[in-house]
Image (cartoon, rainbow, N blue to C red; front, top):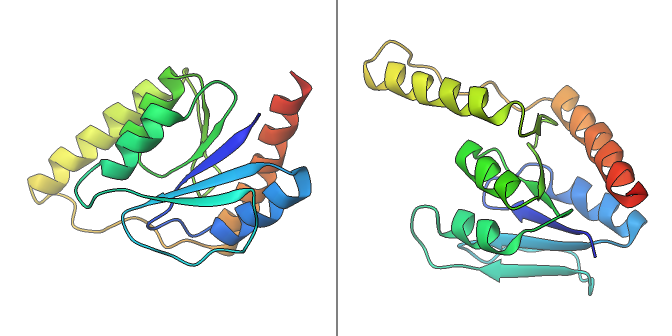
Length: 149
């Protein structure tokens, strides 16, 4: 059964995922290192992992599998999830695929090096209504394509 895993600590589209998952009667697993509120629904569960870097990522990478959906902005987690057969989408609606993950990871590493050298001092662009809309459209398309298989 298709399940949606959310790298939940900083995910800005949790409420949207809950609504879409409810419409399709899908399970949702929030993975976080802190407790958080979520709708009372038997198909939604919260997994609290130990504090520490990558604990939530490790749990998701170990548990997501074929035809599941992982929602994350974490590029290394996206790569690990793709390797397990999961579909991966960012909160802004960017689809991570086997074809683009290598380039995206290389760009991430280059940008990290430039930040370390002080060449880049800004952070990511603010999350916008357009990002939210793009996410919802891509998530809907992704779910339909998985359910058709």
